[in-house]
Length: 83
Image (cartoon, rainbow, N blue to C red; front, side, top):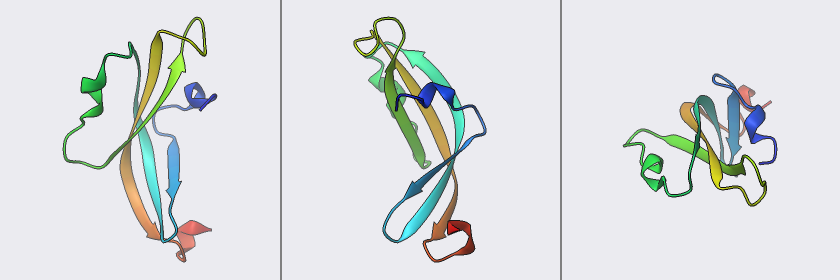
């Protein structure tokens, strides 16, 4: 996750499992303190949340970069989207 800060809103993020591909779209980036666990509960909609350390003192930074991504597609591994 060293380069997580390089993603932008609207960028695609692909998650691959043995059977499926999941396409997520970056919807929000936020820098917070580690005690903001309340931000991880995004309701009932499928959300991928990526987290890494950021800011001064990295990797022992006092801040976290949260990248929220919304599900924008699900594909079987053998579909054309997988290629």
